[in-house]
Amino acid sequence: MQLTGAEIVIECLKEQGVDTVFGYPGGTILNVYDALYQHQEEIFHILTSHEQGASHAADGYARATGKVGVCLATSGPGATNLVTGIATAYMDSVPMVAITANVNLPMLGKDTFQEVDITGVTMPITKHGFIVKDVKVLAKTLRRAFQIATTGRPGPVLVDITKDVTAAKCEYKKETPVKVELPKKYTETDLDTAVSLIKNSKKPFIYLGGGAVISGASEEVREFAKKIDAPVCDTLMAKGAYDGYDELYTGMIGMHGTKASNLGVSKCDLLIALGARFSDRVVGNAKKFAEHAKVLHIDIDAAEIDKNIKTTASIVGDMKEVLTALNAKLEQQDHSQWTDYVKELKETYPLKYDKSQLSCPYIIEEIDRVTKGEAIITTDVGQHQMWASQFYRYTKPRTFLSSGGLGTMGYGLGACIGAKMGRPDRICINIGGDGCFRMNMNELATASRYNIPIIQVVINNHVLGMVRQWQTLFYGKRYSNTVLSDGVDFCKVAEGLGCEAILVTKMEEVGPAIEKAIALQKPIVLNCIIPEDDKVFPMCAPGAAIADAFDAEDLKKKEEKGN
Image 1: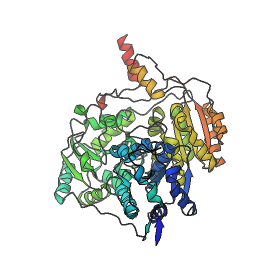
Image 2: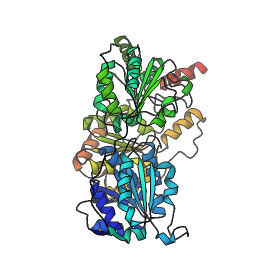
Image 3: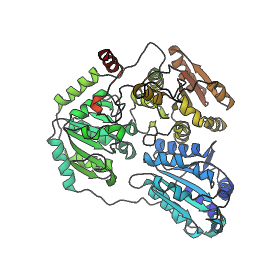
Image 4: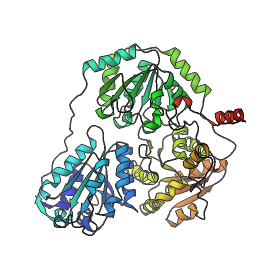
């Protein structure tokens, strides 16, 4: 049948099973929006307050569901406003398709009104980018975009379409999506080498990355950890892939990881990295990272092998598939002496905080208690993000959504909206600092417009908390442009944008406020006032070995010794 390019876009989205898109219309993409109008019962469109909110919402939808997130934007500033969200998705391997429209083909390259080379702009931060100049290749291009976004290591793909292509007609024939099977890159010898390393290890430690969530390998990881009897630490991206209550779990690794994880990895003789990229925030001083250990790295992306840390052996492949094969080959191991030692580390160095006053860790523990650990938690970036990773006990994958690689302030609220649209059955809570909240709080208007019952918890210390922490510890307490004391009232802002609001200033107010927020089934803001100088501990100084992680007590002893 003959369809316009705009109608082909909608039909291709339907082919791919897309039920929700996030975006903002404009001149060049009007044909697509006009076609979308005819299919609004099949594809629900969320009009965000800003295109960046649309990209973060598509990201949150993808992370919460495992499906491809889709966002739409017009040319020029509409397209460039997607850039931060696309980069966020790229750094964290999130499947996303961003569809933009550009000026008419004859007007390209002439500095036409709202013209920008968005494929060129986003080239370094996408798995691939297309500009469609012929309606006859539009359907094929869109199908290819979804394949690329989901095949192998996922990531964002951009499809830019000139406006005249959206108006032109050609023959369209519906197709069923075909999953691309990548050729197996590992051999039986690779598996046998890994098994040999594991069998000969006395002190193995599992370092779990975001690939465990992406591959859906939680059950295989659990079986693997139990079979080789090894402690498990995780990264920010891996939260929920391994049960946070399990006795083998030691918490997060890295700059704000637990001492048990950091010291355990520093003393192990075999580090097994599963779907992890050895980020600088994990590794610290690379020369001193797991310096007594052999390294076995399993990852779907060959480019990650030996990129940051030299490995002893590696397997390139889908983690779920590889671990299934390894679990079948492995016999039950017994490392009780080693795991008992690591358990002692956990008991000796527990996570602690001041329980005499309202604090972010207390708020997060209350959220955990009230929701019974069943909520989807999104965060922005900073101290609250680290506390959310430390004090909420994640037991299931796709329940912690946060910007890990790019560290995007303002990510959480849009992501929370996307997560709730993808998982309406789950309580969705965004935890953000007051600095982050200021960046994209306009998306509260989106939540209120559609009555999306999300909960925005503002951890309000009236400063840029993480930056202030660095200024305190490393910059002689010179607080340059990090104090946010002004006349902004977040409760009034929330109410002005159509949401409910609760001010929380005391510990005893936290639990009832969370319970009320859940019961209301409306978008709501909890404005929680905490002290300006609370700090996230443990912490490793930038460039230091993770074994040298310190906490408040260590700082106090150092200061007393110095005096």
